[in-house]
Length: 174
Image 1 (cartoon, helix red, strand yellow):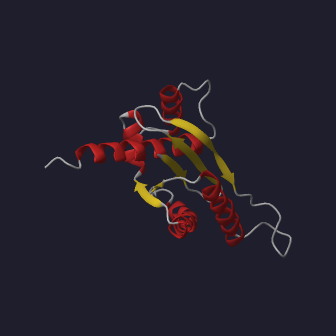
Image 2 (tube, rainbow, N blue to C red):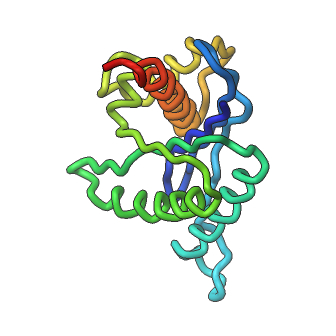
Image 3 (cartoon, one colour):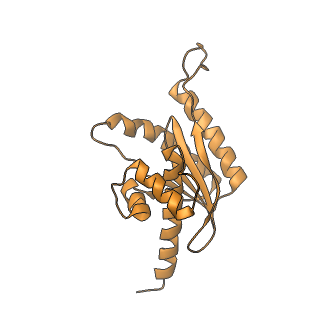
């Protein structure tokens, strides 16, 4: 199965496509969508949120068509009490991504950040550096995925694959 993991954001959205069955899936492709705030609006100033969301929508739909995942796994909405506006901004990006997945007719799974971190490191509160090192070690990469959004997207896709495997193994158990 091919799973596309997404770490949503309005500035950087990490993505990773994993493929395979069993213990070690292969990384097909991983990277980030960089949604620039640079010039681009009708007034010539910085790009509006709606312009960046439109760019994310176009790029993501193109990726869905090109990679043809069987499932998209995305991080669920999270807000730290010190940064409540982050949830609002992330919510905009998630909405665009969720709608694109729905319209493409692809299976969708959502995972809380703590679940993804625990699945990858054994610690639901692991920091970004630890996540990067864990992904690097698990896949035997020469370097840690960078920026951290890429490592998070890889971990999200891997979490989805593992949970799908567990669900398949236990589906007949009562």
